[in-house]
Length: 268
Ligand code: BTN
Image 1: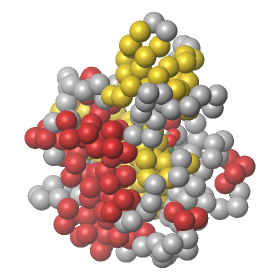
Image 2 (image 1 turned 90 degrees about the vertical axis):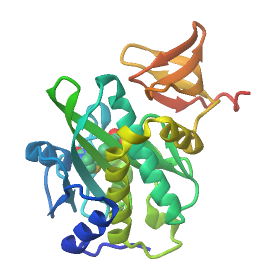
Image 3 (image 1 turned 90 degrees about the horizontal axis):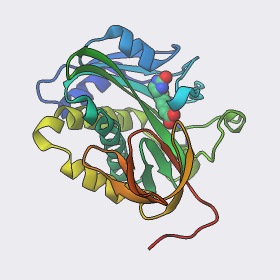
């Protein structure tokens, strides 16, 4: 069942604030923009949240486009000032993924999993993605833009533009989707968990990622900027990098993509 109703921004702002103690949150709701990440980066203000009904130049990872029609999906970017060592930036994407997966699970959507570093899957198909963009303000000080897209209603043209198996919440057909309360939960959870990250550290995050991890222990193709390698996906390092076993032994990677190898079964 679909929901394309407009959002009540002032109520959404209040609902999101209920998740945050005294943290700033300023919601900007646009019918259309090029990219909510670009808008948020331009605002460059801690606590800015940009939501759009449609993006004309939605950005995905690795320079890809993110198909963003006005069919009731979620296109959202959250801007936060954050002090953290640059090595730990990769954890932010995992934190956002875990937050989204937890909220979807709480809304009783079944079979939600995560694919490192930042794909949200449902029934093994792509339901959403996260794009983190950063601006360095000083040493170990960043303005972070945490952009996420979630398929709620994919339109009929989606398969022409999306180059992998994709799914939307409306395809699950089980309940009326309340985009307003789903968004309040998603934005509130992502903001509060990233703001609270300094106090809590990464341990519980990594354990939660493991719980949702789609590919742990599986044979994967690992695509790095320079090569494609056959590997067994072992799990995550404490800084969020991926740990794999290859012919060269156990290795870690910060920037890569993984996909399941179709010719193999689960590894032991
Ligand atoms: C991916 O490639 O999986 C990441 C996709 C991220 C898409 C979202 S939609 C909202 C935000 N604005 C953008 O331009 N991209 C992100």
